[in-house]
Image (cartoon, rainbow, N blue to C red; front, side, top):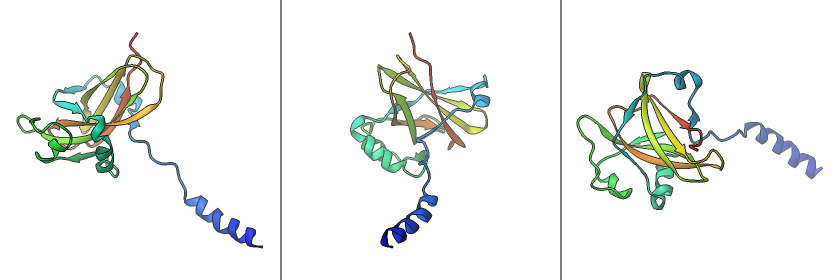
Length: 150
């Protein structure tokens, strides 16, 4: 009888369980086909030593506006945004095997694309973060993992 009660309590709880959201969604084909991407030139990847802090700050949102003192936490107190741009901590992701690098682009409608180009397309998808000088908060942030560079 106790097993039946335990199972009956577990089943309703299982109905509420759901898959965790991905760190970043992949860029949709409609945005990918747009030729109106403009590069974001001022950004840097958060060092591995402060990635856990970045993940904590980004736990509920794909980006967080930063203040000047926050940049020191992520190893670059000298990083300065020019003009009307402000620093934002932004989710990023990459494929592990081989070297890789990030590029950031604005797409239409305030969409920010965080691209990772890699020497390979094999490996596990890993979380990372970048600090970028942005002119506005992104409406949406997507990930684009480029095909491997041969």
